[in-house]
Image (cartoon, rainbow, N blue to C red; front, side, top):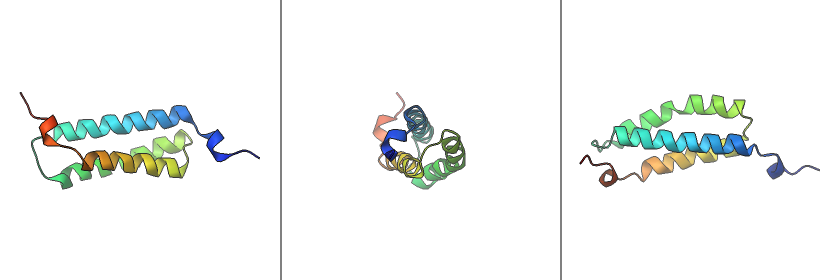
Length: 87
């Protein structure tokens, strides 16, 4: 009997996590001077289709896809403008 945790594609999991974090940082940085979180979430929602397609190509389980995407959404939610002020 093969356990589900032993068949996780760790390279794909790490790749999708890093791409998600980089995308979140970029969109938060692009919108650093705006306080409208809806625009940032619209950009993040636009990332959903490519995220699902690449995750399916990398054979990630659905639970891992949902977890990574929600973790990115939490990162967007807890952003703070004080880290992105221009000098």
